[in-house]
Length: 370
Image (cartoon, rainbow, N blue to C red; front, side, top):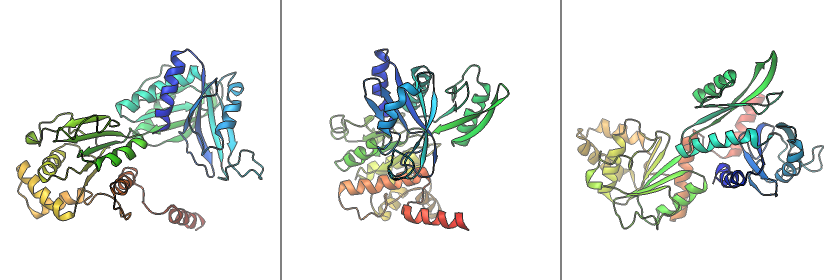
């Protein structure tokens, strides 16, 4: 579950009761820190809070001082995560400095509303926020328009186009002020084609990550809401009509991941053919089972789509898929298999290396010193 999913219920409760609150947002990190820019925490006056801005070392200190710090408006505060016996006080041992924007309801409410809309619509959002001076807390969103903040709107649009966060100084009233653009990618989506028992841990892991999850299967007695209560959608596939005639049921976004695990050759072939027929295929397509079976599935896909099953075509399709799906983690149970699949999807969607962090960090240190 993401910070936002934890924050929104508390926000709605406080908003309905017309109570004030403080939103804390990590806007910059110097050195090492558990949470990165974009992490958020919502604070209620009665002590309740949702979300995190660190690994647990800063939350209490941020909550203790947030209300009087924001009495006159938004403010950016710096907190250290150095060890307790060092010069900085809140020690987690990470050895970094975290800058946190603290703001009340008046400026936080439009931000939370925009984030909620983008989350449920599963679209990316870029937020340009002034971090200093008399305009601190002023924002623009892309997509979206903010009257009287043309400079911010340009920066937000740039963040959306680049798909990246950045910081820049902007001139307001002949004075240069710091602006942070926070790019938030679309909520990841996982389409699980197959409603057997082995789909349940895959659903559980993906929902814990805060992903949108759709479960679909041609077997109505398996694809039920009672079996997959945590899924965003559960659908019975019209297998005989596939590929082609299932609008909204087989419709992943280009940023989504799909995993085929029906354990039925006919179902997998027709679902796979439907995915191949999409004008914009999903970012990840994983097929459970050996490569030999996937090769045979693709030969059937070619027949269903009216293509000659040439070796070149099959090889081209094979290159697009993750078959067998998952990373080599020594998986043997449904839960460990699900973990290996989710790990490969996360690696693929984020274009990460999948290497141990100690190796990645060692390589970066070598490059930095050369």
